[in-house]
Image 1: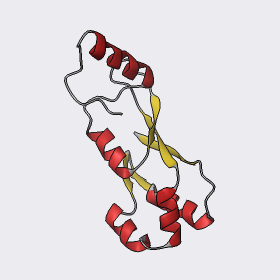
Image 2: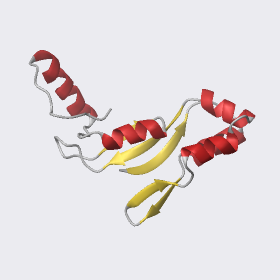
Image 3: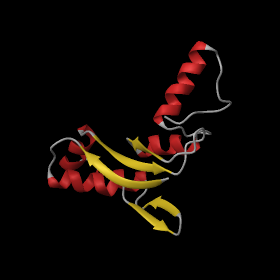
Length: 121
Protein backbone atom coordinates (compact mmCIF):
# COMPACT_ATOMS: atom_id res chain seq x y z
CA UNK A 1 0.00 0.00 0.00
CA UNK A 2 1.17 3.48 -0.84
CA UNK A 3 -0.22 6.82 0.28
CA UNK A 4 -1.35 8.82 -2.76
CA UNK A 5 -3.03 11.96 -1.41
CA UNK A 6 -4.78 13.60 1.51
CA UNK A 7 -8.32 14.90 1.03
CA UNK A 8 -9.74 17.65 3.26
CA UNK A 9 -13.42 18.34 2.59
CA UNK A 10 -13.99 21.06 5.21
CA UNK A 11 -12.88 24.67 5.02
CA UNK A 12 -10.15 24.92 7.69
CA UNK A 13 -7.53 27.33 8.89
CA UNK A 14 -4.09 26.94 7.36
CA UNK A 15 -2.74 25.73 10.72
CA UNK A 16 -5.36 22.94 10.93
CA UNK A 17 -4.63 21.86 7.35
CA UNK A 18 -0.91 21.70 8.14
CA UNK A 19 -1.66 19.52 11.17
CA UNK A 20 -3.63 17.10 8.99
CA UNK A 21 -0.73 16.85 6.54
CA UNK A 22 1.66 16.32 9.48
CA UNK A 23 -0.65 13.64 10.95
CA UNK A 24 -0.51 11.60 7.73
CA UNK A 25 3.10 12.54 6.77
CA UNK A 26 5.08 9.48 5.71
CA UNK A 27 8.67 8.73 4.90
CA UNK A 28 9.65 6.04 2.40
CA UNK A 29 12.84 4.06 2.63
CA UNK A 30 12.92 1.72 -0.32
CA UNK A 31 9.50 0.10 -0.38
CA UNK A 32 8.83 0.60 3.34
CA UNK A 33 6.58 3.50 4.29
CA UNK A 34 6.13 4.77 7.83
CA UNK A 35 4.78 7.80 9.66
CA UNK A 36 7.31 10.52 10.45
CA UNK A 37 5.75 11.36 13.84
CA UNK A 38 4.23 8.81 16.24
CA UNK A 39 0.60 9.24 17.29
CA UNK A 40 1.63 9.88 20.90
CA UNK A 41 4.24 12.47 19.92
CA UNK A 42 1.75 14.20 17.61
CA UNK A 43 -0.91 14.43 20.33
CA UNK A 44 1.55 15.60 23.00
CA UNK A 45 2.85 18.31 20.69
CA UNK A 46 -0.50 19.69 19.50
CA UNK A 47 -3.21 18.78 22.01
CA UNK A 48 -4.86 21.87 23.48
CA UNK A 49 -4.19 24.09 20.46
CA UNK A 50 -7.02 25.60 18.45
CA UNK A 51 -5.68 24.00 15.25
CA UNK A 52 -5.76 20.54 16.89
CA UNK A 53 -9.36 21.04 18.07
CA UNK A 54 -10.33 22.19 14.58
CA UNK A 55 -8.58 19.19 13.04
CA UNK A 56 -10.38 16.74 15.34
CA UNK A 57 -13.76 18.08 14.14
CA UNK A 58 -12.82 18.18 10.45
CA UNK A 59 -13.69 15.71 7.71
CA UNK A 60 -10.49 14.41 6.10
CA UNK A 61 -8.89 11.16 4.94
CA UNK A 62 -5.83 9.80 3.19
CA UNK A 63 -6.10 7.89 -0.07
CA UNK A 64 -3.95 4.76 -0.37
CA UNK A 65 -3.38 2.60 -3.42
CA UNK A 66 -3.47 -1.13 -2.78
CA UNK A 67 -1.35 -3.18 -5.16
CA UNK A 68 -3.92 -5.91 -5.74
CA UNK A 69 -7.31 -7.15 -4.60
CA UNK A 70 -7.08 -10.62 -3.03
CA UNK A 71 -9.86 -11.91 -5.29
CA UNK A 72 -9.65 -10.17 -8.69
CA UNK A 73 -5.96 -9.08 -8.40
CA UNK A 74 -6.65 -5.54 -9.69
CA UNK A 75 -5.12 -2.53 -7.95
CA UNK A 76 -7.53 -0.17 -6.20
CA UNK A 77 -7.70 2.90 -3.97
CA UNK A 78 -8.99 2.95 -0.40
CA UNK A 79 -9.88 5.87 1.90
CA UNK A 80 -8.22 5.73 5.32
CA UNK A 81 -9.71 7.94 8.04
CA UNK A 82 -7.10 7.60 10.78
CA UNK A 83 -3.93 5.79 11.77
CA UNK A 84 -6.03 3.32 13.76
CA UNK A 85 -8.07 2.59 10.62
CA UNK A 86 -4.83 2.09 8.66
CA UNK A 87 -3.47 -0.35 11.26
CA UNK A 88 -6.72 -2.37 11.22
CA UNK A 89 -6.57 -2.38 7.41
CA UNK A 90 -2.97 -3.63 7.41
CA UNK A 91 -3.78 -6.43 9.90
CA UNK A 92 -6.76 -7.74 7.92
CA UNK A 93 -6.09 -11.01 6.13
CA UNK A 94 -7.94 -9.98 2.96
CA UNK A 95 -7.95 -6.66 1.11
CA UNK A 96 -10.77 -6.44 -1.42
CA UNK A 97 -11.75 -3.82 -3.98
CA UNK A 98 -15.28 -2.37 -3.76
CA UNK A 99 -16.69 -4.76 -6.36
CA UNK A 100 -15.30 -7.84 -4.64
CA UNK A 101 -16.38 -6.53 -1.21
CA UNK A 102 -19.97 -6.27 -2.46
CA UNK A 103 -19.76 -9.72 -4.03
CA UNK A 104 -18.34 -11.23 -0.82
CA UNK A 105 -20.99 -9.48 1.32
CA UNK A 106 -23.77 -10.77 -0.95
CA UNK A 107 -22.43 -14.35 -0.86
CA UNK A 108 -22.04 -14.31 2.91
CA UNK A 109 -25.61 -13.13 3.46
CA UNK A 110 -27.42 -15.20 0.86
CA UNK A 111 -25.45 -18.46 0.92
CA UNK A 112 -23.51 -18.26 4.17
CA UNK A 113 -20.18 -18.51 2.31
CA UNK A 114 -17.36 -16.39 3.72
CA UNK A 115 -13.62 -15.96 3.45
CA UNK A 116 -11.75 -17.59 6.33
CA UNK A 117 -10.37 -14.37 7.86
CA UNK A 118 -10.87 -10.66 8.41
CA UNK A 119 -11.81 -8.59 5.38
CA UNK A 120 -10.38 -5.05 5.43
CA UNK A 121 -12.92 -2.27 5.22
